[in-house]
Length: 274
Ligand code: C2E
Ligand code: CA
Ligand code: CA
Ligand code: CA
Image (cartoon, rainbow, N blue to C red; front, side):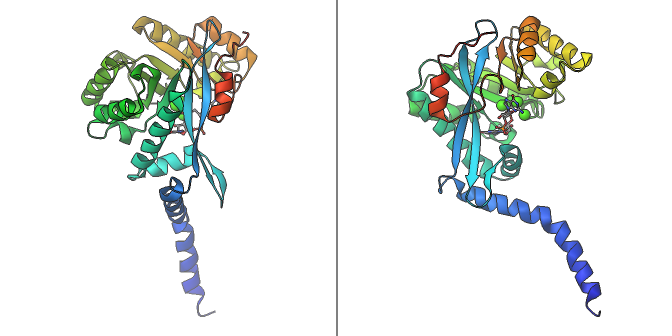
């Protein structure tokens, strides 16, 4: 087998390149996804813990390709985030969510912004311009950012958040508890709420530690005058425990999966029984 050496090398390279090729494919697909109409937004209700009424919706990006079917944003967002694609996607998400808001009664829409989007030049001007163009009041828009987005350059982030909040936007700190934020530093940021990561909610019924963490985040939120949104709420038992703990908002499959705008609108006046 005179060529065996060569094919071993080639095989080795193949497996090394697999993830690279996969990424390229995702990137290539994503860059055409907008033009080909493969993107959509799904909306998941955010429910007030006390009145159990829908007060807002989180917009979540969906990508369905002809070749692979639906692809999870948990997979493609990080890839887009490593290139300028995230800006194209982000522009599309923002404009689409704002368009839907125009004939949506009352509630706010909560929109995810990646760290790279948040750190762009003049993020405030960028968002404000698009919101004004859509004729939407900023207080109907909640901006979701993660700890990573703000702790890299805390001074600058604090200023950006301050300005956004001055203009009337709501600010949510997403995936709270999973990053490396110091609790002490949280108070420097103009925020409206902390979103407790699903992993803590999952653990609540199983282990005392998770329940204790959830409780302390709620206390922290109260002390700082912030709402606390529990994410990934799936069971009645979690709903009860979170209401007892004092979470101001609940979100999860228990109430609804993320659904297309029309379906979400039908949930807008729902009152859930606790
Ligand atoms: P995230 O912002 O933390 O969003 C919450 C995720 O949990 C969503 O996953 C949602 O569908 C899922 N979820 C909600 N309730 C439940 C539940 O009760 N049980 C379970 N198992 N899951 C639940 P999704 O839609 O797959 O999004 C994954 C992540 O992708 C998001 O996490 C967010 O980081 C990112 N993402 C989604 N849409 C956008 C977007 O428009 N822009 C940016 N930058 N990121 C986005
Ligand atoms: Ca989010
Ligand atoms: Ca989250
Ligand atoms: Ca998450």
